[in-house]
Image (cartoon, rainbow over all chains, first blue to last red; front, side, top):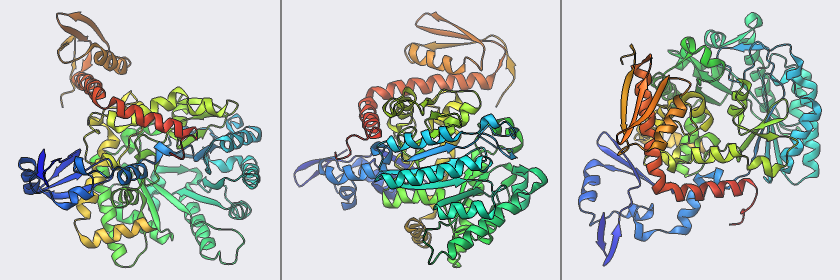
Length: 477
Length: 99
């Protein structure tokens, strides 16, 4: 398309577009976004004589590109391109005291085999390895299995991290993902005093949570609610404390059992005193693949539930209730702020091996936690080394390079021209586990359908100015 | 969708559309899922599928098309992808921070 303006030849750059009823959404890799009527879009395609100013401002005119400004925008939206690993996931044990229907960690049925615990020696080597990586920011995340089953090593590792932090110039944070069954006052105090942020799983009201997350005597629901309230109270009463207390978080895994309970799920979070929730559909990998017939959910079912949930959250927000949904917040950050959203899975290329790495209980290192979970199923394809290996060798392992190529969206047939490319990302491990190749096939890819459905919905929502204002406030939190 | 089991279904892939590389990649992905044999014939390859459902075979054909599109796309976007991936790997090593 060419346009004569000020005697200069000008070409409209329509990199990616999507027709949505009577509107067309145009986006570009610099985060530029224009929504216009189908009529105006057709006029500009046929006769680009009078290009509106916003096309110049947003990098849609090839002869008028401000490369300095656009380059910075591009980097802001592609955080994985300029990172070294910040997220270091330590699997304290592959054992678990629960038997969740969708467990991806390969933990169910492994309660007593102590050889599945990480030793203190290995844990310290993991920490040493992380401190040798170049990132000035390190986030250690303790996972499992259930990490509290290996409490002695966990607590000693926390102390070791804090000691290493005091000897370095790195900015360190620590988080724990736990089902709380083994939590007690003493452990809680230790975690709070060492500024460990806490996250758990709460799948909704008691009947839904119990169906998904099996525990001995069905105690999980009451225990999760009790400790979320406990940590919330500690957060609210931290004034005067010598250490910082974080608000606890929780994630929801949406399964077939969640259908029809969208509002109840949100209400459960509000009554637990939480101000955010993170919804994600169950993935057909690990133990969930075995139970897929009883818990599996289609992308359409998930999106339907997601819409109901977000609409309800917005209704609560309008009534003054403070709560947000994190997946929506991440997409909004990318759409409104031209930022990365801070999520390694929703970036191009993905953060496997460069934004995050996962250390299994035995000291083997994987590109990400999903890759480590796959290894628990017996497939070591994404193993990138061991804590005894040199950092340089691990960070440039074949699997890291393969993940980068496979998740770079310009190399994906359906993604390279997708209007949602600036907001989206793919997971090579998920593709490999569900479709047999790292590249996957987006035409039938579960996550692609879910991401598209969520972003479609957000663009539908922000046509309402009040909704748009509320969602913009979510980003500021 | 039809999911009846069929026997000896033959599908011909013309080399005018599908490269050998795309067919090999699709075959590699499906080797654990579908039993098949292949042979070169005229200007293409003939795949003979044995005892599998129409859905599986449709998925295979879809994957062959996906691989071919990816190969074709790489001729256009390959340099950009290589640049971005190289930058990501260099950054991962902690270099190029001040660029």
